[in-house]
Image 1 (cartoon, rainbow, N blue to C red):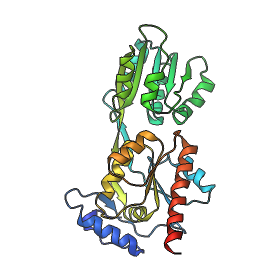
Image 2 (image 1 turned 135 degrees about the vertical axis):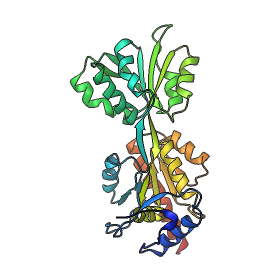
Image 3 (image 1 turned 90 degrees about the horizontal axis):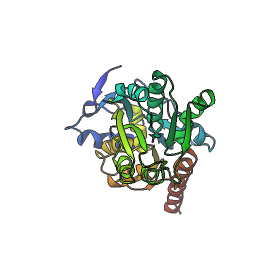
Image 4 (image 1 turned 90 degrees about the vertical axis):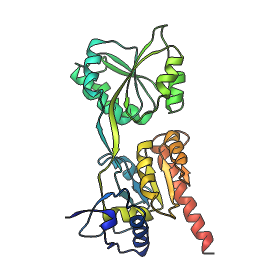
Length: 303
């Protein structure tokens, strides 16, 4: 199976729409070629996907299953992958040598990275504050087996970093916070907590980078799917970089929450949908809303 750059690819997609999209992409991608893995066959889906799911491979299953219950076919197109951050090796030693009033976790990946270091440090007692239910679910199994060592003790009324920083309980005048985070995360959490008098130690334990190669046929089908589902600003930036090479892409983007949606809008994406309460259930509802609006517009066109 050959590896070639996108602008050198001769399109073999079965759909004229896909061919048109890829021709535009090739013409406008010469300065920053994306590595495309050529497929020997077209997509195996018997029905064209309505929703593109874009999380790291292996982490799209819950959304795919939830949408399948509504009869919605999905296409998996991972756009990002996680890498180690510069502070990862410090995390377990920091947990070993210090006691914090709070550990603040704001994403499932941050939670997974933290748990690995926490186990290496000997499972010290920690009190965790999470940004929402999706992040909290990472700790469910651990709390059942280490009930006295780790507790998820706080979640804000709205699942955003800004609200978390404004609502995190403060027990004393010198309240300490360990904040293991992505290198790409903004500074609103540590700034908001510091403004309230917390002492915050931020460790950049991981990062997200775009995938290095994308399958030709999967990309072609993704361009024509009605909805693309994204779960982080990093993912939406990766998608925006792809479609910026297309002149007329105006399908819908559904975001897991407000933070990702605001990033999508800042990048100039149109038809952005997101739930008022971040999480899988609201995300599915936003996807259904986006598909419903599309179906309504198509019906109106053919009346």
